[in-house]
Length: 491
Ligand code: GLU
Image 1 (tube, rainbow, N blue to C red):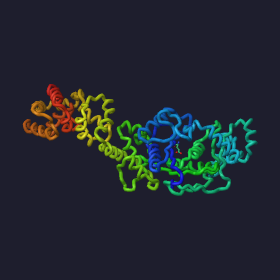
Image 2: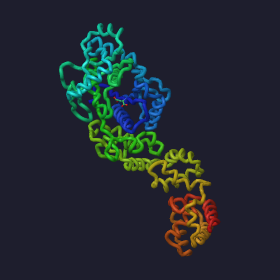
Image 3: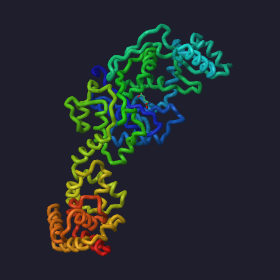
Image 4: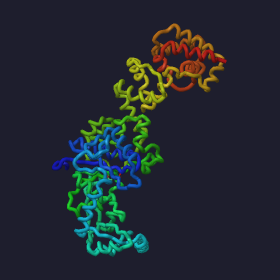
């Protein structure tokens, strides 16, 4: 399949917005495929839509791809944004002279022509075709003009011409052996003569894409299924220019949980949002890989290395995949809990810093804290609420505690709690449970009359964090101080 030529794959985003999870999946498959076959992964920027493309979006996408660890070998440099590699420029906006050269070639060979139809004439043709139940294809009277005549006309014409590709006169089928979909047959008359270069001189996507994929010597093109309908036009351009066709793989659509195409309506669709919400890049990659691909052993949790070793186009699935956030959280939790604690702490630190938490810096404490807390953590961000009560100075009595503070047995519970604390050292989980039992017996309280006051004495509110996990992580002096504040507020 990929044996004769060195594998070269590309991700070709349009920098018109954030990096969508669907785009990230395409880039991931490119990356895994290149890794597996020791190939080259190219990042090409499709920015011919000058109105919608922005430098900011380009930087954002590069940042997100870099965060995912999908390192490319060629293309736009992730830091300087300069060209990196022998087939540049890698931004389509800088390749205009190349497109012009090939457009010229096609004009000269008679595979393309200047078309002087006005917008009104095109609309009228479409209208007529619609009435007659024909596909709305343009039938240009200029298709058989020779180039000289067209160039002469261009000098005086009011209509600025477009350059159209001339589709074959005789109907034939184009056969695509898609790596995901298998054989796809396109009758040539599915498309009419299509625009290659707009009247303002800007080339269109299908033209640029075909030229670039060929000149950049790409062997495999993985992209979203929505581009399947573009492939016929691109195949025609390849044929006319005598270029070798790469292998195409059109990846399945990603759906939301309601089985509609994944969109903002479903929640987060940008990689960046998942990053902010505390998902790990490797977990994100693992989850995305499984949207349209499966490992031969149906392994679910995989590292990048495992995935690139096992990746193959045979196991790409053409059925649409559902983006299931519950599964993503599970994948993330599994990766997160498997991290060495020092690494996990480093990843949590920015979240803690953002909140201004003051937490112990010693690694034994951090190790112990993570052992206790990580089972309650699905994302890094979950760590914020789990660790908040452990931050020095975080304690205050919440509004919600006022009811508990007025209960008759609360004061007794606080006093007993304080005296037990005074007597104890190094309280572990069991020690705390024992203390709670003692309070239960000696103060003759149970249920919420027992648990809620203790929670108020430790975290300042009657609901929330698991006190038995927090207490072993807190210093006795801190616990005493909090309990005293609570006791002083009893009404
Ligand atoms: N620039 C196109 C997009 O962002 C990519 C098309 C392709 O991969 O051929 O959808």
